[in-house]
Length: 178
Ligand SMILES: NC(=O)c1ccc[n+]([C@@H]2O[C@H](COP(=O)([O-])OP(=O)(O)OC[C@H]3O[C@@H](n4cnc5c(N)ncnc54)[C@H](OP(=O)(O)O)[C@@H]3O)[C@@H](O)[C@H]2O)c1
Image (cartoon, rainbow, N blue to C red; front, side, top):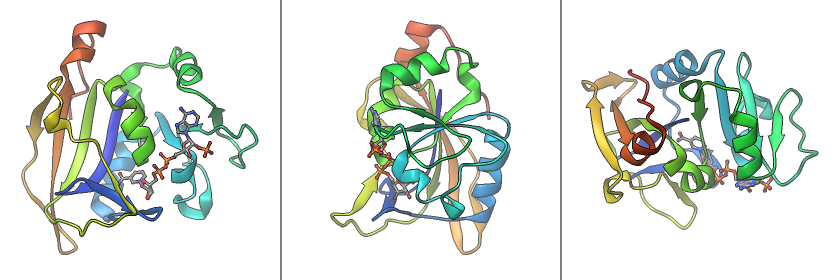
């Protein structure tokens, strides 16, 4: 499983149930990386998707305690154990954890890699700010490849990859190359 997120320089991914950034070039990359693959997200993130519909052309797995969640076409799982069971049939590098803050916090160490879009801009912190985990503080995560700086729509951002050494040690799998 690979974490995929866009965040500010101070790791804010959203606020008050709204994503921090919507940058077309990044969205296009997201679509390319996840097309025909598996995406995992929490029930709050579903509410932020266009028309609150699941993402087309992907296997959508949504974590919620509500098994009757209104998400036609999605697989609803109600615990991390159930998620693990559900993922046994998929190639780990074809599975993307796409948010939100709760799921990243809960599952980041079960990811083999993180592919992050980091926007060169600090956003103001507020009580409703939602953060991506600080991988720099975790000894098991090492920084990998960084793209050149992209300039788009007034934003500057880089694509940054991190690798989870614990995951490689325990599972012997190497992260996807980007
Ligand atoms: N920048 C980015 O890349 C990015 C990507 C995605 C989302 N976001 C942002 O992140 C924010 C949403 O994050 P969030 O933390 O509020 O919500 P979230 O992670 O999307 O969803 C949290 C919900 O997931 C369910 N859940 C979590 N762990 C579970 C478990 N172990 N078992 C069963 N269900 C579980 C619960 O749903 P129930 O309450 O239904 O039980 C929980 O309330 C939004 O602002 C969104 O825009 C940003």
